Image (cartoon, rainbow over all chains, first blue to last red; front, side, top):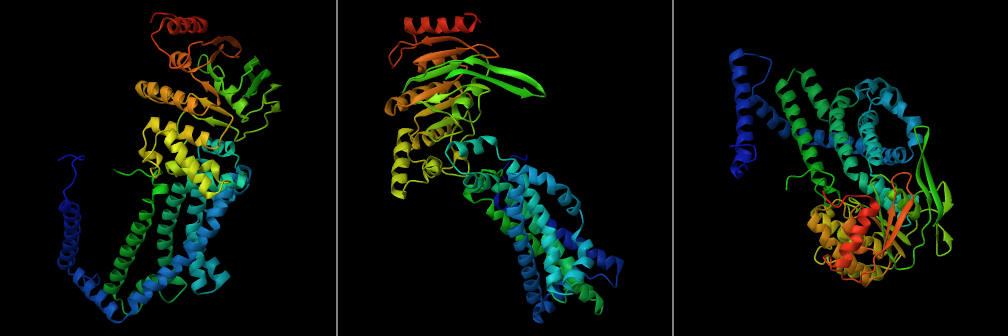
Length: 260
Length: 244
């Protein structure tokens, strides 16, 4: 079998499931053989998950985390996309602001936690602010590069058909840059999901991040810690998968490589 | 076009590209501009399109000086000129946003038929062949009803068979909807098959070396004696050998 051979229907699911199953088995037997008292086995994690569901905390924690991400990411998109488009459209403005952005960009949102607490106190708003910061920069950067990568030929065609600068921005530059903007949004959503967990460990007392830290602090319930971690992973995957569906919309599909 | 010269400033050195170009084009005439690559054919087209301003001289169309791009004269690019985020119908309708919905639909239907893209109205350019994309670009240009069409090596990126077909298509379209066409190419056959007059430019800085009138009516028999004579004439004027 070579890499060009099309995998059969069942193979697409069989091999990944086998790999996951082997990992679970490895985990299970490692716990047994090392006889650890601290780290939970897959079975106790499963029981922990069931316990969380029974106590109805899991759904409200998931809901809280998702709500914070939606707020922080949403605001970052609302502010970041227009700002990025402007910076890409006016290179002079970009030259002025770019150094500041480049200095702020590599600072982990975690480092902003003390600052966020000064600004907003302990609470939801601090967490949302941190998520906003984490997703803002990838969005701005993607928009700037998206706009500056628009081929000159498209702008010229826009001018040729008598469009005003605003119309060119709306009808040529934005749709031409949209695939790259979507990539930026997807990266930002991934970062937002990373940041929400960290923010919830410090700033608030609900959400999946809080569930992780609280399970450890109140009685060293590592089965619940790992259960919450698994939920974080699964939801992150689902968010990314959902966002990827946007890439198949016809008016942006040209910007992505798709196996046909 | 009178005494048009163009000097580019490149790395502090001034590079003359066009030198005293004088050309008078009549309405509904098909002009081909040929010349060695890099001689400034595209620059000349960009000047006429209003995307650049000449260093000296003036370009007037119907007594009106050219200042900036205008939908009355549309430039068709070599490739990748169509908008990939719009369907065939969306591309053709791009310049028609001022029209009412019904009028726009009517124009789109008309030009889809003219360039023979029926059935592809809702197709995106990534699913079209190179020749279809160029036909779409011509349709998008014609849809805004321009007086002049500037074509910058429009078939340059196509394979030779498709090119031949596209020449026929362009002539058919031009005969159906007469416009002034200024067509830049480096292909001698293309020029002799299409043009009323062929303008031969010298190498940089480009001057008009010769203007050749092609006096064969369409459809042209490309193995007739007159055709071959004119072709040989053009080849020798460009200074190319007859044998390879």
